[in-house]
Length: 119
Image (cartoon, rainbow, N blue to C red; front, side):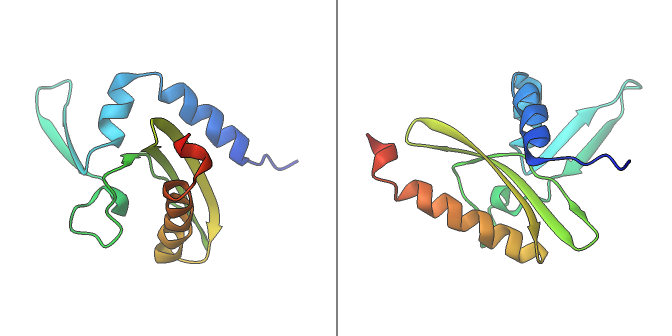
């Protein structure tokens, strides 16, 4: 029997990781410099376009997280802060790299414009 990962599985893993400040720090940065056990450093470039100030998708309210793609499914997990609240958005199965950002951007705009959430 084939094991499947669901959106609920991803949510649970991310919620647990968000309990750690080191995780929040790493995933919220466009680049991160890690000090390795031997004292050397490694710089990682985050490919989350919402965190890249030069990207058309840059959004200062996105606090990080991102996932990759599998075959022709493009996925994206975004932690978003707005109206004094945090939102974890899991988008799975977009058609392309750019469409996953467009899909999530639509949700972010809906959150921004939500009258209910501003109360």
